[in-house]
Length: 283
Ligand SMILES: Nc1ncnc2c1ncn2[C@@H]1O[C@H](COP(=O)(O)OP(=O)(O)OP(=O)(O)O)[C@@H](O)[C@H]1O
Image (cartoon, rainbow, N blue to C red; front, side, top):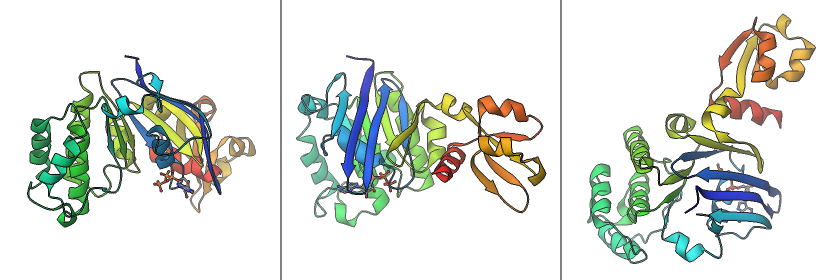
């Protein structure tokens, strides 16, 4: 099998008022990639295109080295998916849900499912409609991980989870990729989760890729620069991304290559949020 579990090349999709434009990135096996971007950036659309729930206008998507449409039925056996909303039948119990979902997979692991229920404290006899939102997310995660998938695609899986369950999930994901044979694509707005577990990051802004690559390279690419009003020269102003001027002074993002010229100013490490906020202000 290929070393890249997921590869997108020049993928585009147009809706009225929105274009996902020329998206390319790849996810190597054995790693976790975070997919970030503000509301409406195109993350869910990208995931739906990967899963062939939407048809792209142009481009190529390969899953496990094969065309994602031609290989769809085989690929589904090796992919676990979680969306930010539950699509199971409300009147089913957790047990019924397992029975129904497991019938689609050759590789279903009842022991893994039970272990997930135990870790997440989910009762077997409770109906889906009676579960809280967080508990429904946990049930989806248990179903997504119980057929031994090679690739997990998670669209905001931590939305609705309390901090303890989020922590548990992050730990599970780290355990899941430990043997180097599995990968995770994980869209979220909780970027601190990604700083903790993601090796790669893809940042989409207004339908376009801002950058995609190793997390350390992404975080190392910029610095947060701060200073007093009189220190903001016009040359510096031109170099700052997402300049914010307050009563106290100014703040913005600067490319690491430019930052060395401004060592006399405050240069701090930028978080994923800092980068997203300032690039978002650039428009
Ligand atoms: N089926 C559709 N028909 C028309 N427009 C759509 C459709 N699906 C998504 N869009 C539009 O595409 C854009 C991107 O939406 P998408 O759900 O991919 O964003 P997102 O990054 O996942 O956002 P969020 O963080 O809010 O979940 C939005 O403007 C949305 O209204």
